Amino acid sequence: MTITMVYEVYLDNSATTPVFSEVIDIMAKVMREEYGNPSSLHRRGSGAERLMQEARRTMAALLCVSSEEIIFTSGGTESNNLAILGIARRNRRQGDHLVTTLIEHSSVLEPFQQLEEEGFKVTYLLPDARGLIDPVAAAAAVGERTILVSIMHVNNEIGSLLPVSPISAAIKARNPRVFFHVDGVQSFGKLHLQPGAMGIDALSISAHKFHGPRGAGVLYLRKGIHMEPLLRGGGHEDGRRAGTENTPAIAGMALAASLSCREQAQKINKLTFLKEKLLSSVEQAHPWLKVNGPREGDAAAPHILNISFPGLKGELILHSLEEYGVYISTGSACHSRKNAPSHVLQALKLDTRTMEGTIRISLSEQNTAAQIEYAAAALHKVVAALA
Ligand SMILES: Cc1ncc(COP(=O)(O)O)c(C=O)c1O
Image (cartoon, rainbow, N blue to C red):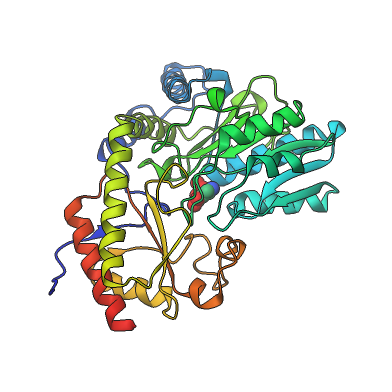
């Protein structure tokens, strides 16, 4: 099949997503018209404060929580740091043991490493070969002195969808005082995510993963949980996160969240269909490829596909696809410049040839079937040329 470069196909939506045009419009409007500081006592300030309250109500309603439980942050990294460092340090008198997994994002793993340096003991759970964590194993790691468990909802590299509700039930049956934090950065806006119904005490989300702006995120923190702030200053966010609020980004995030959470069932069906279409088409031409993480079913996120072509170099595939206008990733964008094998692929115990030949394709609802056909044809050509 001959293909000519007709357009751009962006398939790196787990790294970041294109911002919805409605979101760009509202942000420009807020910057132009509601430029006041929400803390100011005059009319410009109260206008900005009203916008913040509206955004807080929107985020709370989408998560089915109350407005006081929403803390605005600068994104997923800050929400994860704040939840983990803040909850552990503030509740140290109750215990010094923490639990997480080996496949978390670095913005979870590094705070845990910091806490180890501060004298906490951390248990790192090993995933199974598909990148899943067994609730029974999670519960077995919890003891009398455990104060916090942090486990992600969707893995950003391999798209495994972790059984968050059963994990919560299992760890809390073992120790009802334990707090459960979930990194929901890759799932919010795509999958059902309700802290109350799922037994989540703290939840991190990030606007730029659901077509909102960079530099805005939320930490949901269940009422009654005490946490030490990371940033101190003007008492913003009820003393939990100081700093003048990024009103345009927060308003943009709330709109992006509302738009992303519409018609979720249809969206999941569409993403599942596109992902399977891409995979089956490439697999037909190259049956030797390996799928990393769950391929389908309840344990597979509908928007992330991680595949290996053992013996090839993922980075070469990436740059060759770029020539066709198709953008993908070799793993998580945060690590792809480090030139080290991904800790997630290592935790799956993949051999070096397989790890080196890995690419990640991540979809959004903006992708079309025609784009997927084009990308599959391009990938087929690239792999055939490199193999
Ligand atoms: C699972 C996960 N958690 C946290 C983050 C960090 O989010 P942010 O880029 O908003 O700091 C990312 C970003 O890729 C992620 O994929």
